[in-house]
Amino acid sequence: MNIIDDLQWRGAINQETDHDALYELVNDKAVGIYAGIDPTGDSMHIGHLIPFMILKRFQLAGHKPVIVIGGGTGSIGDPSGKKSERVLQTMDQVHHNEQALTKQMESLFGKDGNFQIVNNYDWLSKLSLLDFLRDYGKLFSVNTMLNKEVVSSRLESGISFTEFTYQILQSIDFLHLYQENDVQVQLGGADQWGNITAGIDLIHRIEGPNAGVYGLTIPLMLKADGTKFGKTAGGAVWLDPEKTTPYEFYQFWINQDDRDVIKYLKYFTFLTQDEIDDLEEKVKTQPEKREAQRRLAQEVTKFVHGEQAVAEAEHITAALFSGDVADLTTSEIEQGFKNMPTAEAENKSMNIIEWLVDETSIEPSRRQAREDVSNGAVRINGEKVTDIEAMVDPSSMFDGKFVIVRKGKKKYFLVNIK
Image (cartoon, rainbow, N blue to C red):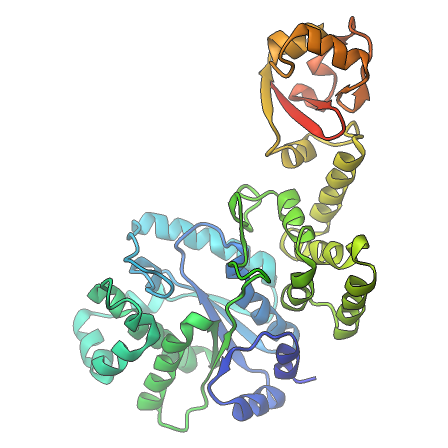
């Protein structure tokens, strides 16, 4: 199957500069295609992941992806999608972010695959101001630039000359990659269309109107309720496991709405059409089993964090559902209980009633603590405690770092041991 057909089935194409020519091109040869990301942070979130999932599909189809880390463009700021000027970062911060993003890309695309990671700082930083103005600025019409949506949307609130020139710099990227890396296609989000077409225009001006270069954008992703994809009550869902644990990452995907899950399976997994069609049927006939959500969570978590992360996430999920937390590792406790209510306690053995009331304040009074323990409503590290004379020994489990308390059926507390 031509990859363009597959992308259309997945609903992953928004605009193309020349559908027929691009279709024929990717059918006839292994094509150089690039997408870029500016190092405005030290981790991608799942919104950033969308174009790179498409780039990964091109890689798997035998094409030649090029990933551009925008060390040059990122130092000035892309106006796309912003209502006001970006705050400029120090170059030290930009370089730190470049390294972090490069590491994430290597994890997603493999260190030895048929792809390249390049940094546009390497060529943009060599341009003098006079070279920029004479060789490139002269080829751009201010009138045309003002009509690009990325600029026109900012005219009322204001845009600096620095951000105004961003589309010229991105156009230079496309030209450089066409000349030096045999790249013929630029891939981006829907908001990048104006920058992409500006790059194509520049290449045609310099290389001639017959230069075979193309642009491809993907749709803006919204949830079924109309809100922006990728945001949660806790903020963005990050690829960095220190920012969003693999368990939290897995939970984000498994909790998706039935109305969205098939769309996300098409975008974020490499399952076949037959596999996805089968899962779509199960959403209709057996929605309570949530098989599509579980497969989505498994596939995306495996792609980003690996199979071990999937196994841990599912182990934590099962333990929290059953209450049997005793088999969890210390690492799994740190992931699964990250957002649970917390308390602190000294590393000393104490009577359970005193520990619940005086040491951790989990119980409001000794009377309530005795009642809850006697009624079997309290579990310590997964074990039901009914003896009000029992002792709590924090050093007995989880490397002496934690004690897990459960009150009732679902209320957990993570006690950090000092």
